[in-house]
Image (cartoon, rainbow, N blue to C red; front, side):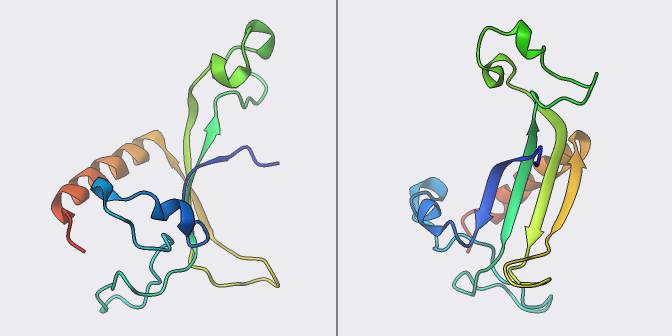
Length: 138
């Protein structure tokens, strides 16, 4: 059983949910999965093919490993454990898959990496600057 819970998924299979939301109330292109990367010399086209997913996954604080814990033991909490401690472990799994099958029917390989809190802070700061510079360009 995985200790990770998906916090955000940009998935080509989730297009119905993504179509209901958009930046500043604008309808979002459907499906919402990532654009297929064609090559480093090709400018992406928003109507281009989409496949795969990008996933951000967290470890809830109620997950413990022996003495390593962020929340009090369940016996010390009079509410459901996820309401006693609204924290997460300082590791974020970033998982990218380009949509290609490999390893047999129904199997895929992705590229999961773990980012620590300092790395997430750097990515967060960069993405904020990137959003300002990108504006509403498409």
